Length: 256
Image (cartoon, rainbow, N blue to C red):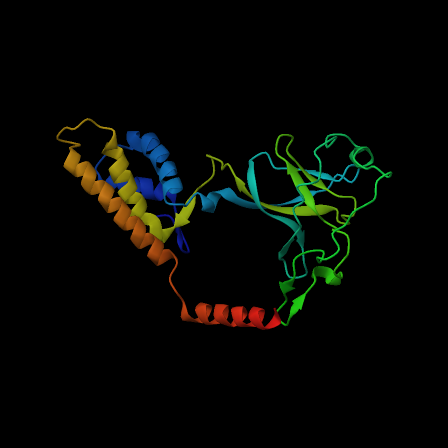
């Protein structure tokens, strides 16, 4: 068993199943593909798909290139003094026009029209800093929306406005995953993954002595039962966390 703290490698689970089912290592490639699909079925693709990267800004046109394995973002922003990603505001009105050209900003601005800002909202959403609610970076309500962004998925770039004053952005995103990487999953899901392999290993076989309908049904039921148990073990309720969450909710209610 290849375990690192509370994680176990997918390779280790596959080899455990091969030993338990008394099969040959020649079945490894088939079982590996089944296991990867099982991670998606169990929701475990999250553990190898979430990435965080720091990307430099092209200050000639205020864009940043998305990573090659990018699927969709979960956070885009800048870092604060305690290592948190402070998210920027998504602005779907920002045009994709000329986003591949160095003079994008000049081509997408019309000085003959009034500049309209929404003046009844703060720069970014307020947040709880441990003592009270603050406007991020102390900018007052009514300031222009500095740090808004849009994403041009077709061209693979993040668009920023001309008020952005940083040389980088942090992107936390879903990636497509790399087959050459070592996939690790929480050890609580080991039995669920073993049950998945056991079920899908014979699911497409014709109904014979090695794969009759009753056996397939039982293995399927065992998988869903093990998945339920794994989810319960993976996210236990800790009383201290529940207590702290309740206190945070009370603070937010009072400040609101």
